[in-house]
Image 1: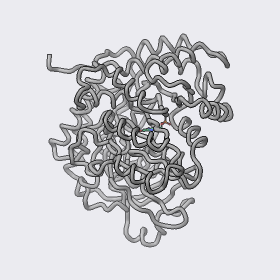
Image 2: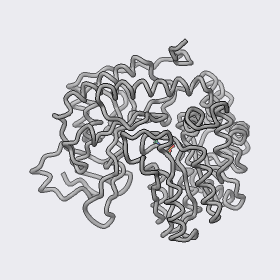
Image 3: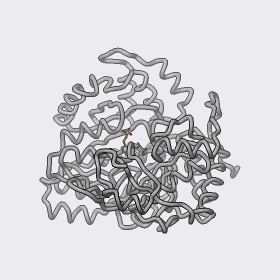
Image 4: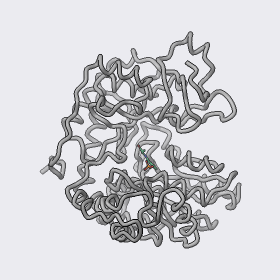
Length: 475
Ligand code: F0G
């Protein structure tokens, strides 16, 4: 059969509340055009994130019932640890309540002010947690990464030559660790090849610098390697994942993505001393090392999810469904990051709305219009999220790309939901010249996209207002 179907059937349903355009106009005003501030009941198709939004399987729900809620030595922890150990292979496995908690602990232990952490591309929480320690988060992707329309099979790769030059220039003492984010989330869910992991590891080993994976979407990355990298076509995704982890010294993980769980994360390392320091910090804010901020039942759900996500029928369907969305909108003229990513389609808002300058946030404008048009919630990954802000004054340097991410939650939507999304995007594309930009009227000092407030851009009031670096409401 050529038709690829959802390799699961529906057992429990969650009703979707339909809304009218007039209602959505009002909701947008109420939340200051920030889609993070919408109530989910006012969203028809929620593509904000694939994180923590998976539909759990019957096996995961069964595992939830087995959860052992003992404070110390819970059997849920040992089941979880056995699975992570089997698939990831690290000596120390430290559970945390989600990925960013693992990041905070790792960077608190490893980074000092003035140091630099290179990554292919940092995600927002990774960057923020590094910068919170006083170190600098530096992106070193290959050049193709910054060209949305250019096809590259491993657009998430790190530029190993630039890494070599950087270490040569600064000396290894300034670089406490190097990270590779698999897949690279901020630029399209693009994979990193095994050859690139190996090459980056060789550079790190030469200077004695540990290499870590930000492994949130490890299964999708492994499946891309199977599909696109020579020599891996006959290996199982599980074998490929094991090989990826065997090349590195540790990882951070958000089990909310490829753990198919609604909450959870962990931190892995082979270094005994580091693990001890990390566990000491864990106890301070997350909890005892056999639960780390999670309930025993969450650990059981993760243990099952980590195995389910590696099923190739599932990954084949997931990629087919995301490609279907990407191809249909791209054939309709919508510029997307090519090729489609593993967890999302990213629309290139800069190319779609060239009349809106980065200072007026074209990605935000597009995300707002998709909501207004059809109740679809997407996520801006552009200057709202990633602009470099001047810490001691006004102004900011726009992000390299202005993208809107349509992240597909695991096992939640059917093909007709996706058809609805396609129709809405094409309708918005049709009237793209009428779309206007936004100004920020309030923003917090970091991770501003979660709580910033916007207003439709208006030249007269923008001229009166100071540029957008403020810690209080200035509207
Ligand atoms: N690293 C990457 C690559 C991520 O995409 C995320 C989260 C994290 C780390 C942090 O994990 O949320 O469990 O604390 N990304 C979500 C997203 C929020 O929507 O892409 P967390």
